Length: 270
Image (tube, rainbow, N blue to C red; front, side):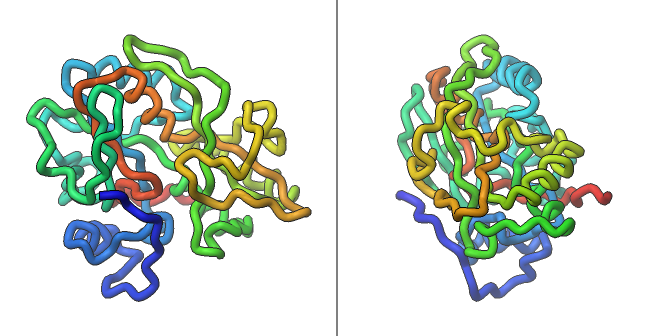
């Protein structure tokens, strides 16, 4: 089943309550992008790998902390990470998954529990969705949110630090900002390394090997700039998908684009 980007407009639950958001996702009542819900709480990328590769993947994350800031790790076979949420079922609560076998994408289910194995170790990694609320609270205008969209992602020509079988190109997310907001967003996001920290590039896509902003990673997101906007690029947790695909693991499960792990961890206060 291929998941289509969507934005639910008529919700029958409290969209600011992460417990209710996860329940609605689990029951199939919410299938939209998670950047529009639980916006006062931390969200994260999901990567689940076999236990035999888990320590190497953790070291890969720690060797590339701007792209892959580690928020939580499960026990082998467990679908819970109690430090992130008491009732979290990591195999059902993101609303969309990508299943890779030997490096090839083979399925995009909404429920990953049928293929979850007793040896899988789940990692939750920091996501830029978490700092968008912080930016907005300081007056930074995020046009993609106002338009019901998500930030675009791009594969760059910058290589990550390899560890064992894990290696690959850095993926970045882009937000179209006014010059004033770009400076403000740079200073604000630098305070939060757990959500990727400061941008890796401001206004210079060519320095990242990005030839065409219309050609986004995954084919979605706000990609068109207005005359008064600059493209601002942050390291992105989708970098982990590149790495596990390149590692050609027998099984790997990640979240589907823009459908993140919603936690009960509140965003840090200024």
